[in-house]
Image (cartoon, rainbow over all chains, first blue to last red; front, top):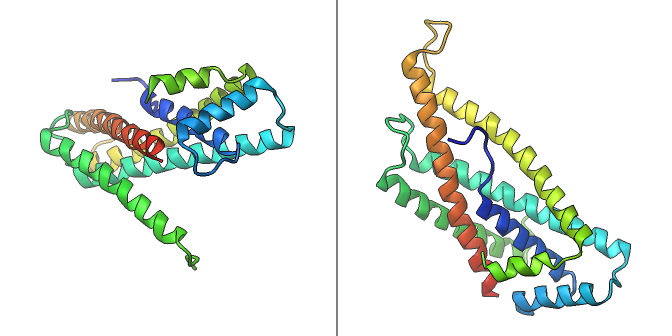
Length: 128
Length: 93
C-alpha cells in the first residue's frame, strides 16, 4: 500500500485535459468541437502571444476553479460510494465482485445525477 | 485520456505549463491532507468501539489496516471510472 494518499494519475490527466479545455474555452468560440477548441487555442497562443495579462489571469482563475470543482466532485463521489457500496466490517482488504460492480454503477449514477441537476438548475429558473 | 491531447498540452508555453503543474501540486497537497483526516475519521469510527484498553487492540489494528487499504483501492477504482466519464464528456460535445 502507498504510504500516503495521492489521487490517481489518471485523474491528474483528466485535470490537465480540463485545464486545456478551460484555456481553450476562453478563446470564445462557443459550440466549437472541443478538440478544435484546444487546437485553436494552442495555435493562437503559439503563433502570437497576444493575450493580455488580464485575460490570462482570468483563464487561470477559471481553470483553477474548474479543477477545484472536479476534485471536490471526485471526493464527494468517493465518500458517498464507499459508504453505499463497501461493507464496513472490513473482513478483508480486497474489494469483492459485488462491491466492485456496485462502485462502478454508483459512480455512473452519481455522474448522471450531477448532470441532471446541472440541467435543472441551468434551464431557465434560478434555484432560489 | 487521449494521449494526443496530452501531447498538445505539452506544446503550451513553458511558463503556463509550470504554473498549471504548480496549481495541481497545490491542490494535491491540500487534498491529501483532507483525505488523511477523513480516512482516520472513517476507520476510527468503523473499527474502534470499545475503550477497555488504552492501546489499539490487535483486531482493531487489523480492521484499521483493512479499512485503509480497502478505501484506497476503492478510491483508485472511482478515479478510473471518473476519468472515463470526464473523458467521455470532453470528447462528446
